[in-house]
Image 1 (tube, rainbow, N blue to C red):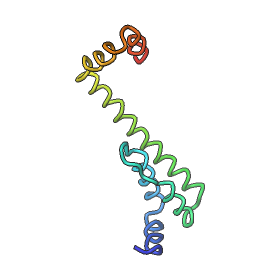
Image 2 (tube, helix red, strand yellow; image 1 turned 120 degrees about the vertical axis):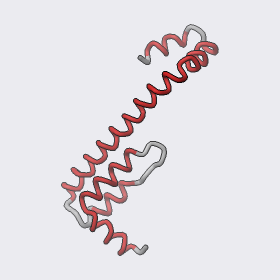
Image 3 (cartoon, rainbow, N blue to C red; image 1 turned 90 degrees about the vertical axis):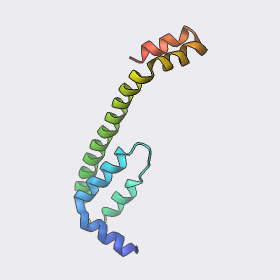
Image 4 (cartoon, one colour; image 1 turned 90 degrees about the horizontal axis):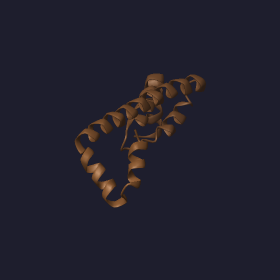
Length: 105
């Protein structure tokens, strides 16, 4: 792909593409996506104020997805491995670890 093809692709998708790039860039937990460079390149073709607004909304929605995955994963792991987590904290650190466990709830 040449640079002109990339710019054509970015200008074709417009604000919906900016929303999706921001959403996917922030909702990925393990893979880092450099979506800021893509948004910066899109500012050449689109209105910067509207582009910032749309990409901010996409980033916010993506962060909520990441938060939901983390919150749900915590509840799943807590049910499944509760005894393991408690034993791994209490045995090496003794009673001091209880302040940590109780403070986390």
